[in-house]
Length: 493
Image (tube, rainbow, N blue to C red):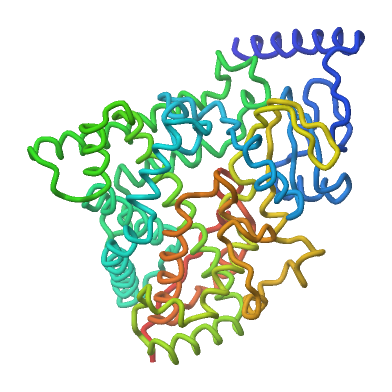
């Protein structure tokens, strides 16, 4: 029955398009070049299951500013640092809105989410709360002890595994570490056991959210199907959102039952703002903010750490040089502190090189053109979806020598950074929509990576070595390894 409805809708849409084309209706002039479009589906057939790679190959033919028709959606794809600078800096205002995937409207999340709201009063308020109370230098400094504690727990978990000769799933272990760091920052408590590789509800449901949010959704290409949600993605994501929001509601009520706000964490800050200035934000804004923080802050950091460990372990020269630096500066077998990172330039280079080759969000979050704009001589219509291919930019052979090789040393004499000013390297985006969690990620990832390398020798079972070093990507809302990195920690000699 559902198939017949979908077929009927698509047939009706095709007939309307044919009629419009006969009378010249809907044609756009002076769009950027792009591949030939098929009826109805446009260029959807060209995306495949690795859109970042498919779009990079198409850009080699059609150029770094390219237009496609993905179903009903006109889409602009940016694949060079020069074009990205024009979009994210010169025309940042007109490109600052979000093209919101249909599934993110579940539980009205997009209506309250700092990640998906347009640039408006609510968005500015939520960004101010995030920047002032979570990601500012003062806040990060005051919470440094929490990050140190969570890294110590990660190392303790790996040490326990080494005694039992068990392997460690690096991505899962990093996920738990990042999850508990955020939960302590926001709620002053752990939400999963840091010493067990067992799933608790919160960890599992966050994983389910990332899976559903990353699935290709017909509704995003054919909005005419929105009412029937043919793949059920919005419905399933709504259930997952509901579970997380229910947990948040319980934690909020538990805090309010204490009678006064005294934990001085993010929850306290938000509740005080709601009490003192109820017109600024409400409880829905607060819970959606927490959902954004957990969704973005856990999956991206854990994925980046897993890619970094994989690249280091499969490149013996890199591993040797990293261990030599750690031993000389920190001392073998010690846990890295944040103040140590500036004295470990090669470790920082490893992190940058990992983000160059494996940006956590390869196409960044989609933007939308608010008003018709001219870009490099092309006319970009209002409402166009905009994808910035950070993955392609990081592998551009006109910018990078040996772009497919993992060579951290390329950054030793380079001033390039990931903070949105150097458009050759924009894993966190740039402009007013730059990822607010960048300062936290760039503190957390180096100390986790350095501590893991400095406290253990790592071995891989020959049976699973091929899978562990398999660099196949699993495309979703984040770019993760298709096969997890499972390695056995060994005590240092």
